[in-house]
Image (cartoon, rainbow, N blue to C red; front, top):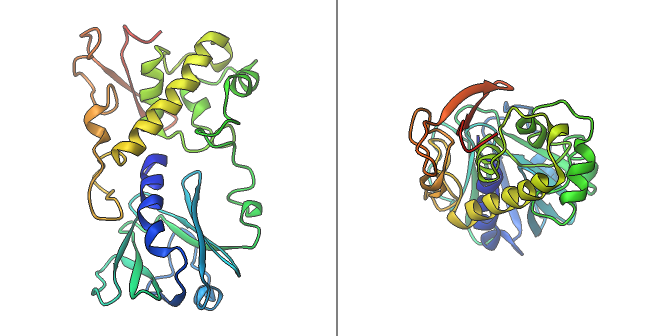
Length: 271
């Protein structure tokens, strides 16, 4: 699944081609995504001028005067800017055609993504209203996470992946951030010191920022808006490296299932 850096990379990639452009047509070839695409989406969007393209968690928001469209890439979705005459392929479900004769095309082979109408108050939409702060914002800080962690027996990895606590810290980057600050992913959130939380907050911010600069993680189902894969996967310390040597201590990286997801860690560096 594309994580926050991939979504941010996509957002930054499509924004320059869309800002200030008028939407001339919306084509919905397949409305059966994770949730049905609104039947009147074309009517709501057509004729609107794109004022803003931004991200909230792993959602991409396209704002026009009439309201905001909410896009989630799901497990395998991607957005590309292409010429409007480019022939659609099997998994190309939605086109948003703008006045420059360019097209924003959603491709989603597994159809776990979504395109929804969020109106003029998008942050009140049911999918966004309960989300926690952005991990790269000032609201996500030591005092905030330390207070939230008190008396919590939940494992730290699933704790920081809870979107009600903080958005966008997905499986890959949670594993990497915990490795960087030496915290075992099974350690209870309430049993971690304030000093170590300070390191964790910095690690989360750093690993996400580095991934954004690098263009996201190279995943089989993800390409950037220009069709180029990200390269951050080359720098991963633990994720996907089961039984490989730790770069720091030369122990073997271990893997186990946690919250129905694969967790990777170094048994010597993390405790």
